[in-house]
Length: 232
Image (cartoon, rainbow, N blue to C red; front, side, top):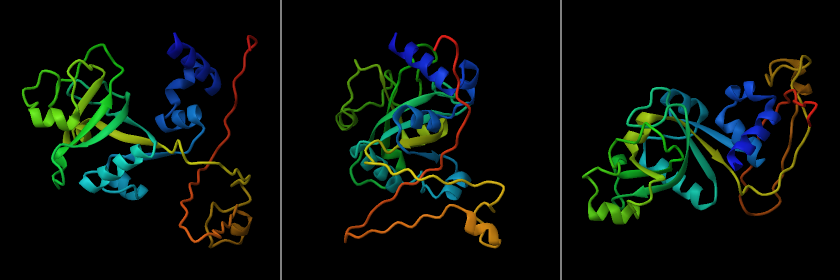
């Protein structure tokens, strides 16, 4: 009942059920939490353009594990042509990044633990599925694997990358926010300093008066028509 009520409320928030198909996972996570969300593409060219790091490396996944320890919420979007029993174009919550072999530099030794809220077919059939004979005692101990917990999936990193196109990292514990108004419009040049209209663009100066380094999270916001009906 609760998920259906949440779906109804969110559909009204975005402008009706017809607009749910237009929602992106990072925008939805932002709307539901009110916290900034980083979209992490799992595509070489897109990741390079976004400067989100080498998602194939062990170092990258070590960073993801630290993000989870800080309390960040991370979801993963599956491919349109996902295989191995992964539901296509669906979001899975990332629960853990596991080193199945300590201090290994082999990405195949990284295991991605996902929460699976889809209990209908297809069922996960890839490596480390519930019936896979590859579950050794050592691997089960490293993953803290419990066969009775059907809501969790364990995917070796290469299998995960074959089936997922992006991740969304929500900075749920980012602290207090400061909102400043400003807009790009027909009177500005979109941030290009070659034109004199550049001075009309929103420009913000941030000063750190402490001796400690500070991380600044900035997000661009846009307004969309709100939806309302006679029923409230």
